[in-house]
Image 1 (tube, rainbow, N blue to C red):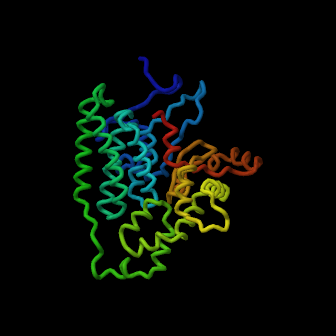
Image 2 (cartoon, one colour):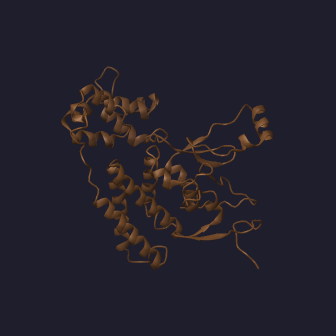
Image 3 (cartoon, rainbow, N blue to C red):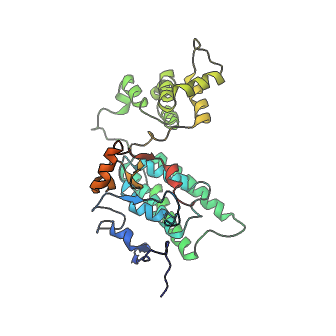
Length: 335
């Protein structure tokens, strides 16, 4: 009996019925026995097709990659939380979510529900959740006003989506950020100004700085200091880029520099660096073309094959993994 697969030499795919629908057995086999999506036997990783050839079909499945890389558990990791939120925000912009296959839509909405539950339980990162809910609301409103066509998927699928979205909003509506009790000391307002300054110097996002300035008068005073914005410029931009901003703003070396204006000029011209915005990012192994979390590692051919390891030594040693920010991750898929 004929069968369909991605490659004519492939033995086809075996599918398994799960609570979330039909999933490929080979994806579930690399996950732990407790639940699909929580990898406990081996570090989560996913091999990616970089270049299409006649022998290798150039197709990467987003839902399969999300499960193999264990994004559900990554939501509960404080180091990887912001990376997942940035990825979801990119997918909800420009109608990318509604153009995805139904399995990918279900997985990503389940991830958003997990984000809402994590914010509710940890009492942290409520702004990230508000941004995602705003993008989701705009997407749903745009689809509701659509005159021609309809979203990809069946009515049953979108009924499932509406139930998930309703649960997400219910979780978000119940979130209340509670101030620490009187037994917790010292509180933020009791810290000296020098400590507040050191905290703000470690913020890499201007939006967080502006939100901090609105929260408390002392933070507003510190955020208005030129040192805060100068350090932000030095973190995100190179000296040559800074010189370009000086020339554009007609700033001489002996002038009093408005570092906040310099920062925003550079941000509009060059954008912000993504490689150091996240405590943990995905990385691409240059040897086995495998995506993995840097802190968890992955089974690499350079470690498992002695012959390959010897060839690497002759060539000068193994190559360092390449960091993959959220925007670069989405480029591996046909979105």
